[in-house]
Image (cartoon, rainbow, N blue to C red; front, top):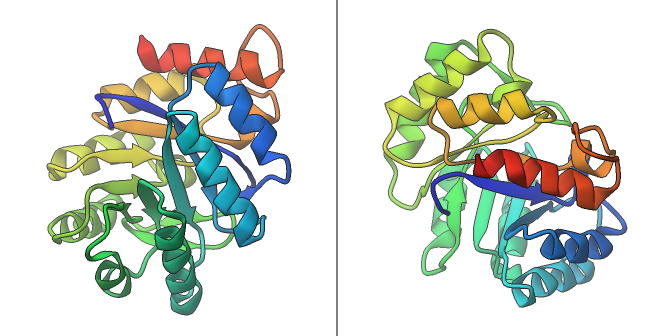
Length: 225
């Protein structure tokens, strides 16, 4: 990752969309170089094709785990290894995941805090989430954190700033980002990047039009300011 990256997720409501391959080409042509998907929504063979397509286009690959139970998460991590993605985002079972990633080049960004439901929600006080972030970031093999800041209650900017300042590793802010002012807040609070999926695919981000090319260019421009 560079100083501040836009990661386009090929997802809607925490599931990889059926026409993800078409959107990869649109994203690559729009200049997006960080593209991800979830382990839910498409069969493994199609995910394998997506990963190849993204790599061939010169972009980094991300898989975000949304499974909350241990066994499902382990299956997802094994899939990430088989897919050869660059980044593994999310997940809540670091003790089980870290041994599976030993010897790979995958950079692991787990969720700090208490994660519930689907789509995922971040629960707990700011202090509890920061404590979780510090503990996770202290582990060898954890490259950074995936923070569901806008899916939490309370003072979201304060939460982002507290987490980013409490650890020396990069933080990605994921989930429910759909406005330029949110991106600016994420930048100012010290995060290394952010993800956008549903809002771009559904044409909700403020742009010249609702088509995906316009959406991605508008989001990309916000990230470059």
